[in-house]
Length: 173
Image 1: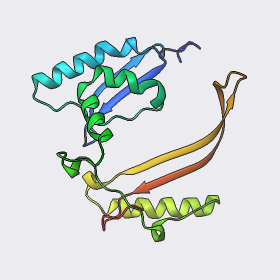
Image 2 (image 1 turned 90 degrees about the vertical axis):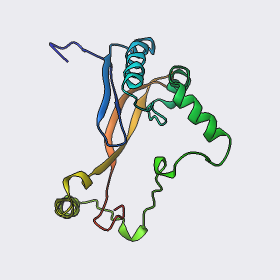
Image 3 (image 1 turned 120 degrees about the horizontal axis):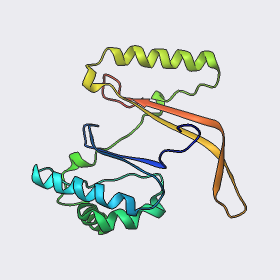
């Protein structure tokens, strides 16, 4: 906000498989119309430089966004068609890495002391890895407040935070 006024409604960011930002823009409303020009410019630039178009996309509003993105990004529509037709064939498995978590590597902490200990241990392990191999995934969950029409109008306290990282032995912890 600037002087109490909201400057934008959404920040859209697209990264490549290395986490490098390839597209980023703001919209002033939830309207998909504001996304068309930046997406078209991104796809044109990708063509000009010989880069692949995106085949995977995540959004916080899948039900509302799916049709729009499939309509405007052909590579997503093609991949969705492949995925809809059963087992993936003709697609390199490197594009779809398998993730498994050994339950022995899962720790639950609910006190400040326990949380601080686990985070400190995780940070120490990550410092041992080369910089390009360090990452932490974060997920947070919380209850929401909805109005009589079922629209989210507020958030409650964070109920759960999940952290994951890649250990030096390659396992996810």
